[in-house]
Every structure is written in structure tokens, then in C-alpha cells.
Image 1: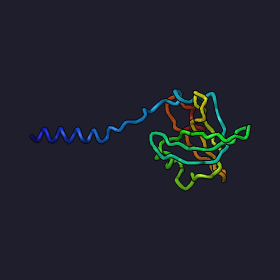
Image 2: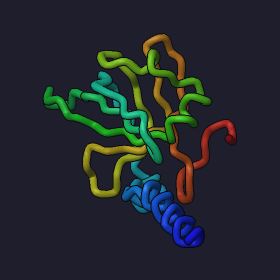
Image 3: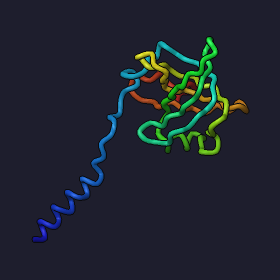
Image 4: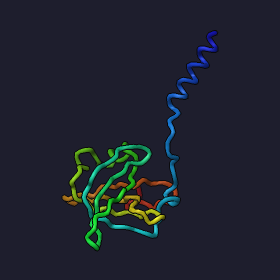
Length: 138
């Protein structure tokens, strides 16, 4: 009887933590290191999630049209250790994002650096297999 209770408890524990999600991917499967982008735009929102946080910005293109871009960044905890915080990344803030465009040409990029209005640069990169090395060698 004790063995059944233990097995049942173990199954419940495993089921509780078996959350479906997207598999972690290598940089090169989704982004192209030969297609750097430099985007100037306004933050619309920040998703502090794992395995990658997402910075959403509106960018006005050469035709004067607004494009919504999704910028992949590192995990929330890593970003905080790099100097990011909920107060520094506010909707309405103008930023410059440097990174690498998605292979499919969509308005998605892997962010490398985010330059704030005061000139502070925050490293956003979600490093991994195939990602270009961080400047300064981290």
C-alpha cells in the first residue's frame, strides 16, 4: 500500500511539472549572423519569461510605416544580472537595438545590445550554439 501511495505521489509530482513548452533552440536555427540589424524604436512591452525574454518595439520604416518587432533576449534572471530591471524597460522608452534578423525575414531579431536614452548599453543576447560571440568576450 505504501508503495502505491509513493508511486501515485511521484506521478502527480512529475505531471505537475511536465509543462508543455517550446524546445530551446540553437541561435543559427532561427537567426542569421550574417544579417545584422540596427533598429531605433519605442518599447511597447517586455515579456520577462524563460527560456527567452522578448522585447517588443515599434519601428518606423523608411516609408513612414510602423513595424512591430519582437526582439529575443536572454532569460529573465540572466537579464537582471546584466543590469536590466522592470523600471529600466518601460513602455514608451525609445531605444536602439542591435542584433541579428530572423532567417525567415520576419520582424523578429535576436537582440545583442539595447542602448537606452541616456546612452547606457544593456547586453541582451541569448547566447548559445551558433550565436556570434559577445563583444568583450563574455
